[in-house]
Image (cartoon, rainbow, N blue to C red):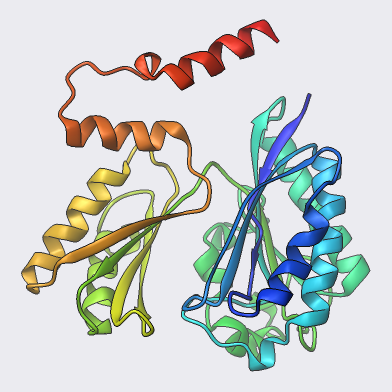
Length: 303
C-alpha cells in the first residue's frame, strides 16, 4: 500500500459556496481521504489535508483545481497570506510505502498534468525543486501574484512547466515534495503590524533565528490583532514550544502579550507530544504511554 499526504492551499477563504465547490470533488473518492479542510477570512485562504493513493489524490485534485480555476480570479483577490495563484501550493509528503524520491516523481507528474489540462504555469519547490534557489517557497512567490505577473517573462523567473506567462485568472501554481510541515500561528494583543513583522524576522532562520522555521507578520484586521504566522518544516529539531517561547520573549520586549495560538490543519501526534511533555514538565514521559498511540501501534502490527 502506498499512502501520500497532500495539503493543497487555495486562494479563497471567504465565499462559502466557492469553498464547497472546491472541496466537493475531494469527498467520497475511493482511495482519497479528506482528512481536514479549513478556511480563514483574513488570510483569504483554504487549506485542505488529504491522504491516500497517489493516483486517486491526483485525479481528485485535478477536478478540485478545475473548480478553483473557474471560480477564483486572482486579479481581484486580496488577503493577508502571500499567494501567486488560485491553487497556490500543492505539497506532497510520503506517509507509507513511498520514499521521498518517489514523492518527488508524484509531485512532478501532478505538475505536468495540471499544466497540460489548464495551461497554468507550474514551479517545483522543496525536494522537487529543479534549481537550488527554488527549494524555498518564498523565493518563488517573491512579489506575489502581482509581481510575478510582470516578472515571469524574465529568464530567472520562468516556470518549470509551461509557458512563461501567467494564466489570465488562475495565476501560477507551486508543487513540491517535503516532510511534514506544522503551520503554527501566534496571535498578539496589538494592532501594530510592524511588531509582528519584526518578531517574525527575528525568529525565522533567514533572519538569524531558529533553523527549520519560516515566519511572516500579518494583520488580522477583523480580530483587531496581528499574527506571527509560522511554518515549522522540521518539528523534531525545533518543536512548537521552543518557537512559542521565543515569540513570547520577543513580544515581551514590546510589552505585547500572546493572546492565543493556532495549529492550522493536520499535525503529527509527536509534535503535540513534545510540547505537552515540556509544559507539563513530565520527566521520562514516552509516546508509548499515550493509550491511543499504543492502540494504533498494536493495530498496525496486526494488519
